[in-house]
Length: 163
Ligand code: SF4
Image (cartoon, rainbow, N blue to C red):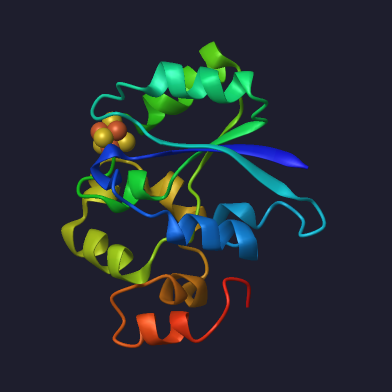
């Protein structure tokens, strides 16, 4: 079993977490590297607290105390406009001070965010393409997680969390 803590961007603090939880259940996005035979226990789910990361120190340290093996910085760190300017700092702090490995990203990057960021050019400008790349490498998955598609809710409500 792997124990995972997730930190989300505070701009998405009211998020239900649906896409992250779906990615955990389906082993998609950055959870695809965990085999389905290995259980994933979510030990923490918290917003960063607002720029530049008010809860960063406590959140990651508390997750470590309750057994987290790894911290995921959620895909919303990169989906928002602009991408989180502190993402590298958060990763470095958690890895070097708290002492837990960090994975950047949770669910696949939805296609609508890929299209918009490509049109704006900010991912390139802000040099975060290296973080986005693994989240945007599967066009089908990106389409699947695009909640702006007209049939998205209909499709989602007609099937279970795990396909
Ligand atoms: S942009 Fe970064 S520091 Fe600011 S609220 Fe989002 S995750 Fe936190």
